[in-house]
Image (cartoon, rainbow, N blue to C red):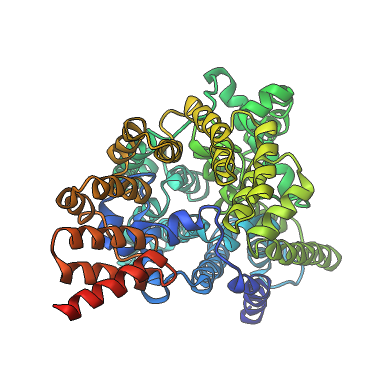
Length: 592
């Protein structure tokens, strides 16, 4: 068995280790890691509640950031390591569950064969590549890790032979603590509490009352993360308000979609564009729900005859439940379905496969066929892994398969804009606006590109279009402020800057603009009071330190000015203004 486990882990590592050389992606990796101000402050990670509360996940990033900064390799290695651990935990869980299925006829194969093959399905299915290769998806991997520990510990607590063992309650409280950590890694795992209930009720013969009492501490420990996230997510932009009467159809359509990708994982994309708006406009909402509904109805009807299949479906559906569309969430602006949402849910097909293998004797021909299919999935996973090398390979692949993808068009536009190719970026943004005129980001980014190419009035129109779609869009307010400043209209720019600072007091662009205005109007003390609380020794704050140094100089504080310029140059050695100011400050100090 050890040799088989070693082969399982070895092939899994072989598939995903190339991801260790991948780059960080502009698609959320910069938001959560390289551009996240909380990476400089562990206290802020645990007390800051904006845009989702997942302090356990962010703490892992913080630990790497302290040692390696923004080097991508360690972050990718962390994802790969969690996936390998999760494969072992799925195997352990399957070993416990297969022991509960009577009448196993293994046809001469090792007793662990069903669990090994089920774990291989979890490890090698190509739909897992997104979660493993995308640094941002650590939240899925880490929450799955702690959730699988909780389910394994709860199963050990429920085992009849451990009833009199003093270790029984150790396993119980280990499960409670692990579930709490899972909730703090990503709160969408809350529904796995129900999976633990089903496991206790239908596989370990616990009564309804005892099963509910067993899991009451799980529920209590989950309330705080749930409440915090409900508050932090409440203000996020919703581009399309899905009528309640359609949400069940959206959820069943998403379930059907995942079933299709599970059976035929050929075209796996980071963004599918399967939004509620798309379902209604295309009419797919009236038929896309049917396969998902049939699967749920059939497995529920046969739940006593097919307990393993029923548990597998429950695990998958429950893992997906918060992001199926029954409740609206911000990511639905781009798509209801994403591969990484199914990461923990892939434990469901693993359970179902293990149960099917226990149901009938394992014939040599059948086992070889299953192994061949799994190895085929492994090869597809290796190919899928290569797609995630960098932004260019990822979005080029997406556009080759779905030329109208709004997310891919906007991402390619951002990629070209970052390289200074504003005309080419503008072409991508214009395509995105044509394909999705409701896209706030496409309008705002197109406006930024037009401004860079000197078409200021056209840029203003798109900034205003973005604000009409989403009046709370900080980036559009910041861009409009820049437009009015270029026109030397502070009275028009000021309200936009104040709006940004009211909602994001540490916003670099808005603070820079206001600081420059204060310096131009000889208000150095006010500029110092503005910048001192917000400057941080992280990349991106170089210009704020430079402006702070200028303010110190105007306020007659040459030593403080010198220190600020030195920090600015250390953060950005290519900042021409800070370099020039530093030289001048050094000369001034020498003259004194």
